[in-house]
Image 1 (cartoon, rainbow, N blue to C red):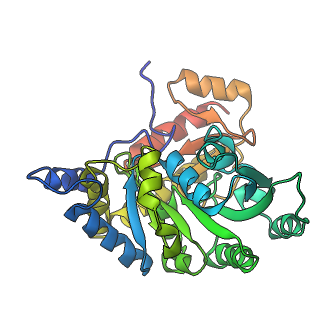
Image 2 (spheres, rainbow, N blue to C red):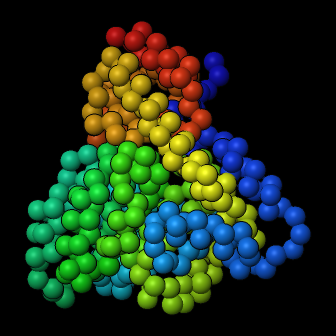
Length: 335
């Protein structure tokens, strides 16, 4: 049996041809270091154009560090970040926000399918400041959510504006932002309420690269020093910027995201198991008992049970219709 990583995560896929070609294109001659190179400027311009925003952009090798550094820039150590209770920063980043933020806290909020319930956020914002509790200083939104559901343009803006109106900074974890955009989310609206955005590269089909987009330029002061201290200011910056050039120059990032979304929809439509969350992007969650999951894993498919007890299947830019059909046949055989 050969293990199959096709649907385990969108980080198991290779780079797209466009991202890889862009890496080759910058791999000649000498350039300035630490993000001062032409490729970093060009990639930054492409991101600014996509977001229609006058922003500072930095390219870093770790999404975990990028999220945590952004939150540390928005909170003091005795303050906290509001986020969904199943947000990646809460459940999968090993305390990185508190580490980089020297003790900043996370306040998990409920909400269906990874979306923060606005009433829960209002309640959290209504708590009095006291000496024995970390009060919220920032809001973190994730689009798409951990369950593949997309905040609509209006939903995200509504939460962001409430937070901003209460004096909170706003961060967006955009690990799968391209998938949200392919599903209809308006990228150009982000600048109206988000101060710091992490624009995902790894899950979109690039190498291990992420873009920190500083939309509130007051937060750019000494950012490079913060990144350097955290080991997140690569000396050969062109190699982290170049994949964004390849993916953004002709819109490949959105084409591939749309393909991944379509493959997830195809898988969900063929599934004999109950779908646990609305399929809006490139992730499908199925209700499956332990016996069925073990049988599927025995066939070589490496998928796993998620936080809510359902089983997650992730598609990506490289997912083929044939792979979806093969998996669908194996799922059907389990029923």
